[in-house]
Amino acid sequence: MAEQRRSADTHLIEVPLSAAAGGVRLYLKDESSHPTGSLKHRLARSLFLHALCNGWIEAATTVVEASSGSTAVSEAYFARLLGLPFVAVLPRSTSPEKIAAIEHLGGRCHKVADPRTVYAEAERIAAGTGGHYLDQFTYAERATDWRGNNNIAESIFAQMALEAHPIPTWIVCGAGTGGTSATIGRYLRYRGHATRLCVADPEGSVFHRYFADRSVTAWDGPMTLVEGIGRPRVEPSFVPNVIDRMIAVPDAASFGAARQLSAVLGRRCGPSTGTNLVACLTLIEEMAARREQGSIVTLLCDPGERYASTCFSDAWMASRGLVCPEQAARIERMVGQGERQAGA
Image 1 (cartoon, rainbow, N blue to C red):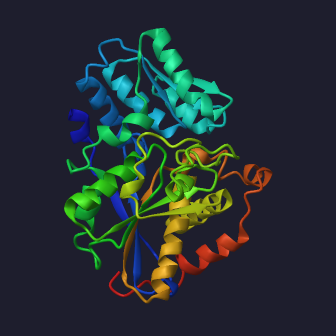
Image 2 (cartoon, helix red, strand yellow):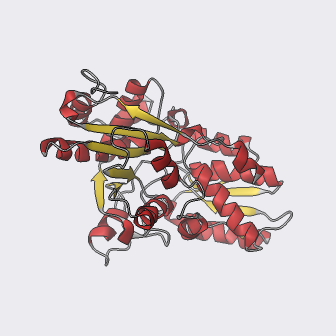
């Protein structure tokens, strides 16, 4: 709990939009300013507290997690805080920068070739060490207090209170475990807000398919290259009934949007933030076409420095065909151009 008090809330940043956005304002909840650099700092704290309070973690317990990187970085931080050994089971494709961050915090990285095997491998390692598998994909939605307690939704509304449109028309987030969307969606209903929740999902993910058709529970096609969001199976923490809309985003658009938003902000952000931005642009365009005013809040999930060898490497981008000139033109038309709206 002392660690939580040391961690101040994250910033809310308004993104400059062009006149094409009409009366719509866009804000980024900057989760990269957490001590471990991502949205997953909140989740890791909640998962450790949940496991401790349930008696699953004791002195010297080896803690194991299946992750695409950012959750494991944050969990390695909390494991070190508690003096516990930590093992992260990661896809081999995880960015080298994330692996280095986990190891810097004292964690051990166990890499697998097939991302679909991380769950079983984490369970195997936990059983073999007499440890505990945190299992973020099952416990994310139940470990977080969605009613308040300074969760991300409550924080957004407190920070929006003095803005021109204090009650957002939309909040946009991605889904990896589904814990963030579950927390936000439940909080909106609990507080009776008119705000709608949109989840931005990579095309190579099952979540948006399951949202459209509940019989589709797995995706066997090419997986997304966007780390941290999108999954091959419907995770237990994904709660579709609190989501109002899902927008599927091609990988090329996500990576291109992250690079262009980084140029506008003067600082790098990761590809999952690009996924969020592309979904926001769709909503902004629709609102502007109807001449609606309002605000949209989305998440800056993690820093782009974790993707220096991927998203911000021209050679890596070209090798994977992640070129999307149409999306680049769309972003340039809407973001960071022209005069700022009155009252900004």
